[in-house]
Image 1 (cartoon, rainbow, N blue to C red):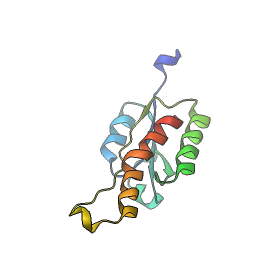
Image 2 (tube, rainbow, N blue to C red):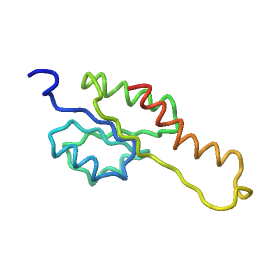
Image 3 (cartoon, rainbow, N blue to C red):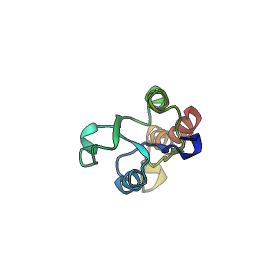
Image 4 (cartoon, rainbow, N blue to C red):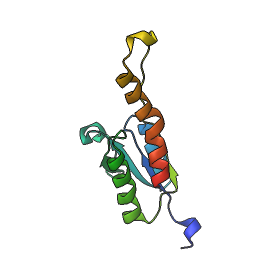
Length: 116
């Protein structure tokens, strides 16, 4: 089969977007879903691969990307949908809280995309 007709690969670094995983899987894509805890992925169909991934951990991000590339040869689509949020007056947040939010929302997607 020509390479451009092979099923696509996808890494989804968060379990909350089941619809995204299911949509890709329904189109015969090889799908990898991830979450910090595998228990969060139990309702996904068996055809969807599961990974434990904490996107705030740089080593874990690279390991997930490396695992998929080793198994599939490439990643065609990477959906960065992990996120952390906070609301309230800025004075109520510590610098560490702000850093943690940026780690998940800004730096983690950069790492995952850079690794793929």
